Length: 378
Image (cartoon, rainbow, N blue to C red; front, side, top):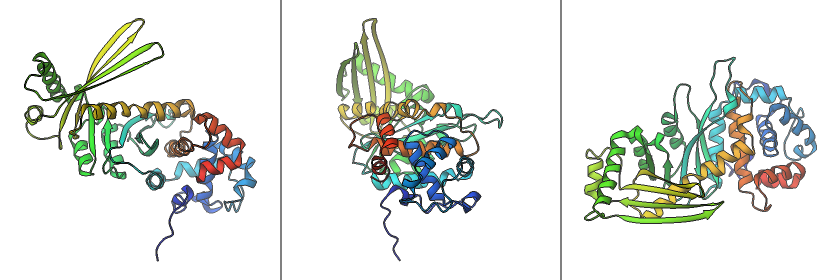
């Protein structure tokens, strides 16, 4: 028998079942998750705050949740999210985002990591958790996130994140930490293209690209086919000019990668950013490789889009959701609460009827139950 379609965010969490979550014998897990999501949307950042929010909105929650024993206590919220398998919660999150996000061909998906600084647990000798997220720059959505393992880094987390997502037709951008041959191979095998920053961690490749562009420039690019684009932005007392050169000639790429170790390598890219302020000017070259044999204008746009994960996601999580100040530390609690914040951020970012910022939407959702329902259910 065919399963009915999952039409709302709560439908994607209704099937969660984790035998380790013993205290759900009194409360339905989907009810606990729904209350926590709503409370997070409206500004709660601790289990005590989530309980208080739930009790203040009990009558409203009873219109669409079963709540056989009322609102759970803050201890129950804390215990449930400490024990709940974060992979299960994340899989439900990814299922929901893939259901609502229409990734367009050529959409830039930026991958980057962020540390929740106050999540370290000195008593348990655990460091702060570091999460790697995938951000769809046109949809303004977090598609998924993965926690790096203890004593590891983003190099091991990025493949896990890519495995979770369907990025066919997208352009995946990653900073220098993710400039790895295995990651490039995984991206192209999934039907996507990559733009990877190259720094000293790939010493020979970095030197090769630098020497290639310096040599070509010294000869005025004579005999070296290339493309060029630039943008100029003015504001806040400064002028920023970005120039981009791309080389796609096969013999040049063979010089960079003589053994063909970089999957479908099609372009070497140099971007020079010039920032002019009253105090003077700053210029700095940056280098990239790409599987996309695209014009310089498109590659420059993809590189610029990458930084929206910092401005539109990480900055908002820090400033509006106060992620770095959250002191939840027990077991899986920090990771699961980070997923709740991502869910809340996605819902608020894509609610467009109220023309205010994220903080204003959070406040209004707490005041106006009709608006909260709209944010939650769409």
